[in-house]
Length: 253
Image 1 (cartoon, rainbow, N blue to C red):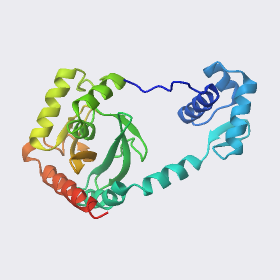
Image 2 (image 1 turned 180 degrees about the horizontal axis):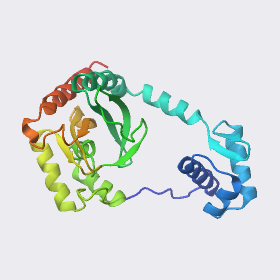
Image 3 (image 1 turned 60 degrees about the vertical axis):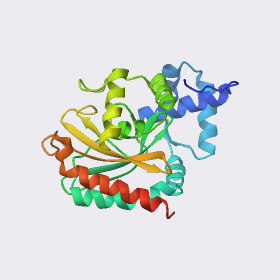
Image 4 (image 1 turned 90 degrees about the vertical axis):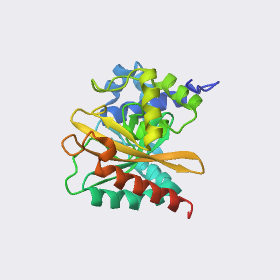
């Protein structure tokens, strides 16, 4: 179930709505925001002026945009995470070894958040970036994480985000998801067979520390380069070895 504030502050909610809309649009004028959010122009101006004064918004002509202050905050947050310090060099090493696109992802609020990525020499160029969020059920990394979460936590995530289709192959049934998570636990890695993007396959291994899953590492490549004979796939050995190194190094931090 989604957590809601018992006594939400409407002023804060409106500022956050403006931030989200500016992020979605890549910038906007006050009139555009007023039409989209059904807010008064003067109220929007007051919110944006306050955000601008504190460095979270910049104004270019008549257009307001989010500032790089968000990058500063996110970058500092990421750099202070022990799991990032351990995973980042291993992500780069695996990308070089496999030649493909490698991601390290953690779960937050029921979504997968890309913490770092690295491209090998033949990697495809996906629309992913550090901080990008993606549904858990339609990705290998998401299923790798879900497979080691308590059942009640999986229930919370599914209740909150549902199982929406992303491609024709996306799992949209809870029973089917449960079966897939069981297969994932048995073989030690998760797969995404064109469930996030048609023509793309992905393999992911969970990262566990002291019996808790703290993230997942994945390899993504065109279907022509990842055989669907999962158990015999060369990438699986590379991936699981890397996951093991991250888990062992985490104990040293």
